[in-house]
Image (cartoon, rainbow, N blue to C red; front, side):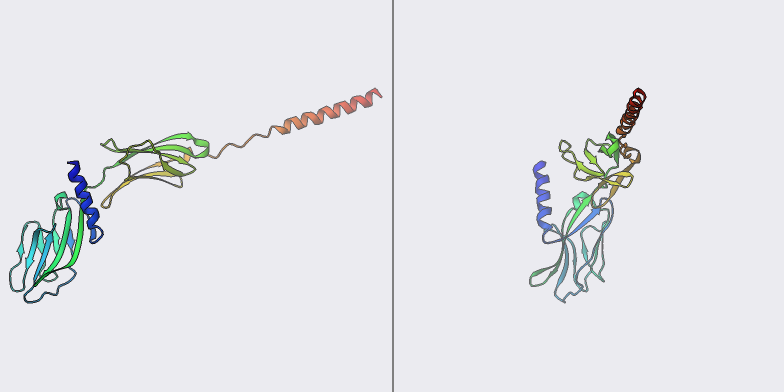
Length: 231
């Protein structure tokens, strides 16, 4: 299973260099627009999935062939392809092809179907309130994935000893609030905590020299008066 997952992501990575990427939320619809509507008399228009599956085949004067009628809408006017209720199995490569004496790839899309991200829960623990230093922990609800961030003077850094799967968790400080974001290309969740009470001004140092100065002045005055009295 891990090998299949690695092969899938390797395929997506390689295709991304030559195809336009499209991210789509699972369960939603995707519209792929054709780059051309010029079709010769002896040519055939094709929408192909993963190099082997012909989703649509169309010639002038002939009803189009549509493989998945219930999920696919093909426009014979602009050759666009509407895919309904996208699922993870629909992730892959889509090509717009004009087929005649030879096949010509007009457009190519790498489609990646993603689930919406889960909500997050943010907790904040002060480490030195006087200087706005604290530890923020973002945890994805209903999951073991979490990330710990050390924040100093409103700048947060991911702690090294944390879960490896926290690339989608980001922490930022804006004015008096700390924000935990959990996002991907199709959705976004966040949790916000007010940290104004954790960022108090550092206490002013007490001036301890002033009383001693007064004592010295009074002592000098007393000694001077005692000399005058004795004389």
